Image (cartoon, rainbow, N blue to C red):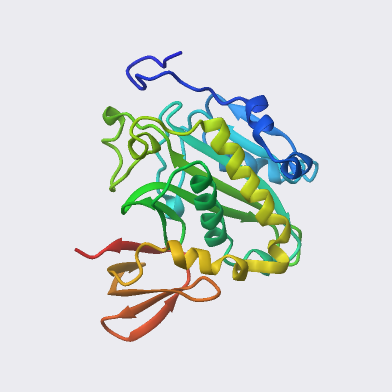
Length: 278
């Protein structure tokens, strides 16, 4: 089956709940709740954030979409999702302690790289705080959103976007260097359903233990796959551009940067933007 209007010229592997469930590990099968699959949504994260307001929606609910009309990245950026061309995955989880999910987006990045490596995709790296890169081109991203009061049960929606196949005629709106799994694998990307199952297996290994283990159990892998350490960069903080050399990340996930003015400094995520300094 092919999508019309030139969006895809290859056979489309439709998202399939049964195919995904059949690939899951027994442990993940025992934990996962509902898997929603939509032909089109505004955003899988937005969908689960709306559902998170209902206490009856079970932890471990997964939302997938073939196409997003209002896909989002960090700091209000647009995430482009042509029909059938991406993995758009969101997962609902809950934590009792606000501090329990400190550094979670970095740990999720490690889980994604592990899943991609299991699928045979090598050379994947991480960019602070939430980008998945391949040879310095963006392959995917992470968006973690939280709802709940400071002393309340917190709902966390973990959004993952991965480029699988973006036709060249749909790439004009992307404002940064990008890559998809189709290019990386020479036209033979892994099955979307199988890759989604691998991602879910990694997430369901990570999340139940995260309040006890935190980022500490994953920080060395993150540093191993950090692909901008030692590079000059410019960090945009509000209206200010801070230039220097990326030194790495701290044990609690803060960016370490040897700034041209001010020496070594630490930065939290928030509204920070990191770009290569040409």
